[in-house]
Length: 196
Image 1 (cartoon, rainbow, N blue to C red):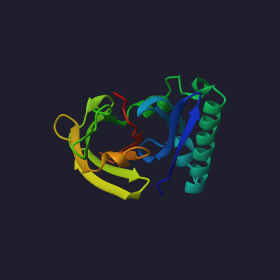
Image 2: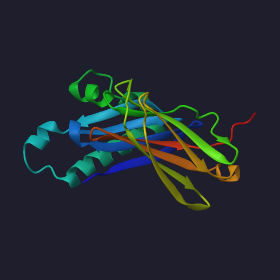
Image 3: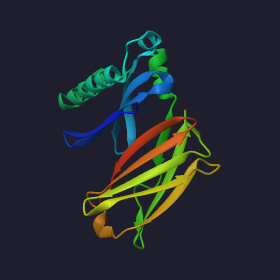
Image 4: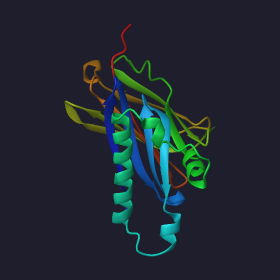
């Protein structure tokens, strides 16, 4: 079973996006915190010891991940986020850093000529990835979500154009999932008008 949690929480004027997921290949339950699409820290719990025995069900994994997700949300609300991030170099925290990442290269200028232009880059442990599959979900408050797929080129970059009127952009969100070598990374980006 694949499961995860995504929550936006605001504290002192900053919106934090908290994403928790089970990383089955690494036997990790991982929570990451993003500000404006950039990961600022993570918390990982290994279940490798428990998985080798029997009796650790998907429901139990989901419960542990939900508790970890709530703990990070509470830390943000209490202004003590740094205290919950992994700082130690354990196999769990190292495994959590060796992962896929999605960067939005043109976040400051995406709309022109009634088109939304997304330039995205996929990296694995900091190196660009060719052939990663990107699935994009563009969600607008006044219309059904729009889905599209594209693959990264030799430079790890991909480009996608979506026909959309600029008036639809405020309060819209883009969810991007990268898939490569049996692993995935999901990032959520909020759209907002940039004042000239």
